[in-house]
Image 1 (cartoon, rainbow, N blue to C red):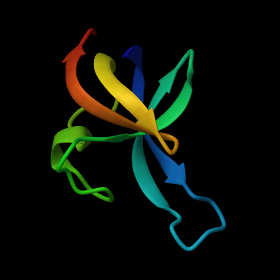
Image 2 (cartoon, helix red, strand yellow):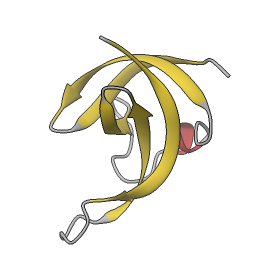
Image 3 (cartoon, rainbow, N blue to C red):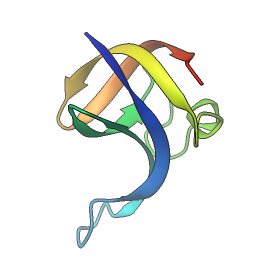
Image 4 (tube, rainbow, N blue to C red):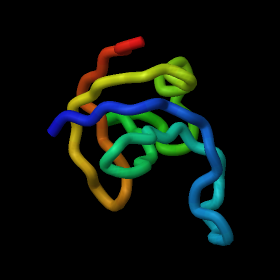
Length: 75
């Protein structure tokens, strides 16, 4: 499925043992923590480069995370 939105850095897992800053896609479909297959789930330098940009991406939602297989910066 394709998603589009703004990439931001924000805190996820508030109040839990897994609370940490993460790269998140804010889209009309909701907010999803971004992950890449094989990427580090807590700090991925490739995803960090996208913070502040609008992207279109392909991927699947799994347990509240968007597992991106490809993406393009749209602005």
